[in-house]
Picture 1 (cartoon, rainbow, N blue to C red):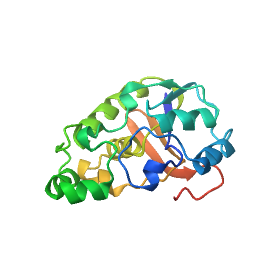
Picture 2 (picture 1 turned 135 degrees about the vertical axis):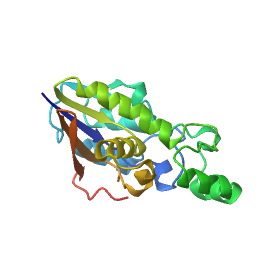
Picture 3 (picture 1 turned 60 degrees about the horizontal axis):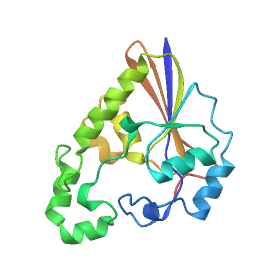
Length: 194
């Protein structure tokens, strides 16, 4: 039995442009246009899922996916840092930011640690592997990173070493407890870089 999972990162929005922890803002005009241009590029899937964030839901809709929200694929809970830029956090809490980037178990923002995110999406992946067929999900970049860490058996410290550009599709194929990864493919006729 083969399981195929394609994870699509959301199109561009102002938060991504500003390196701001998700603040619930919508796609910008260019991101929405690019997502609409990519409609029809994804292979048909038995299951279509979406992270509960605004930009993921809007991206899924623009891609023409009739996707249901999957709480297990929610973005990393950034606690009190939500809506702040990386520079703002670095200026106000440099030690906490450094600890968060170096230690996967750290959650100085009062939200979720990278370790907990990796465990959560790893559990989802194991459950998904019990079903044959194709799943496509529009998810935040950190969810793609967490799945990649799990699939590759990489240490959680590798999480920050994986780049996931906007509107790219990363595929995972699993069979007999073993997964293969196909790195992100840009959708919408662009390189995927901001």
